[in-house]
Image (cartoon, rainbow, N blue to C red; front, side, top):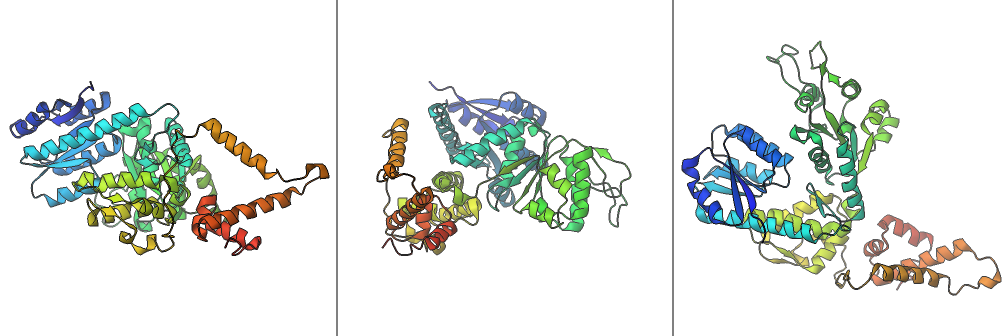
Length: 492
C-alpha cells in the first residue's frame, strides 16, 4: 500500500481552518504537518520536503507573504502549492495565475472546492510516483526543473546543468534563441546548487534603460543624484549568496561592462555615489541570443568580460531542431492551461500534432506555449483539428500526409536495429565491381545523396519542408543540394 503524501498547512488561524483540517484528515491519502511561523515553515521545507503546501494569503502582511510565496515557488519547484485567497480578491487571483501555482482555493472555505484540490493533488502525485517507478536506469527524465525534453540534445543539457550547478562559483553563459527558455536554465542551475536557499535575481538588460540599469544593478547612496533621498540596495547585493541572472547581456553599455568585470574579478562593487567597495558573493549567470564573439570583434563588447562570462558556455537548441519534443511540450502545456485552471483538457488530433511537428517555430517554446494557452480557452474539452489551428501553422503543411503510428519499442531490439543499419550500409556497395580496381568514392557518395533526396521528395509528395525534416537537414541546406545536384522535379 502506498504511504500517505504529506501536506504542510499553516496553523496560525485555527478558528477558520477547522473545515480545511477536517477535509485533510478525512482523506487517507494525506498526512498533515502544521507550521506556526515562517522560520518553522522553511525549517520543515529544508529538512523533509513535503509534497503539498497550502499557503494562506488572507492573513496579515499580504505583500510580504506574496514575496515569500514567490521565493518558495522558485526554490522548491517540485512542491505542489495550493494558495488560499479571499473571495473577490481579483488582484491576488491574477498574481496566483501569473505565478502558475498548482491550484488555488477560496476563503471562506468551501468543502467541495477543498475536495477537488486534494483529489487533483493526489492524482498528480500518484502519476509522478508511477512515472518514477517505471523509469529504468537507462531511461532519462523528460522534465528537469521546468525544462522539458527527451531529445538527445536536451538530455545532454540536463546533464551539463547538473554538473555546472555543483560548482557554485564559475560564471555561466547561456546561448539560445528568444523563447527557448534561457531563464528556466538559469533557474535550474540556481535551484540545483547549494545557493538555492538565497535569492535568484533576474535582470533583463534590454528592458531597463541605460541610465537606470546602473543604479538597478549596483544600487546608490543617499545624495548620489537628485532624488536619491536614501540608500538603495542594488540587485547585485540583493543576490549576495545567491544567483544574479543577466539576460540579454549583449545590450549592456560599455561603461557598465567595466563595472561588472570588477564584480567578477574582485568580488566587490561600488554603489553609485559610493566611495567604498563592498564585498559580495554573487554567482553570475548571463544569457544572450546575440553572437558575442561578433560584438567583441566589432568593439561593442569587452573581450575580457566575454571570457570572464563564458567560463562555462551552455547552448539551448531551438525547437525546430528538437521537433520530437513537441508532443511532450503539448502535454505539459495542456496540463498547465487546462487542468490547473479548472478547464476540461483539450485534445490535439494526430494530424494536428504532425503539422505542429513540421512547423518552423521561430518563437520556439514560448510560441508553442502561447498556442496551447490560446487553444485551451477556445477549445476546452474538445478535439482540435487542422482547421481549428491558426492559418500560419498549416499553410505549408501537406494535408494529404498520412499519420503513421510510432514504432513500438518492443518490436525491434537494439541488435536488430544495428543489424538493419549494417545491412543497409553493405547494400550501398553491392553493385560495385571491386575487381576492376579503384572506385570513385566522391562520385559514389554524391550519387547516394542524390538518391536519398529523390526518395525523400517522393515520400513527402514534393513538400521540401517535410523532406528536410525526414532527412534531418535544414530546409535551406536541402534547397542548396537540390540546386547543386540539378535534381529539380526528378522525383515526379
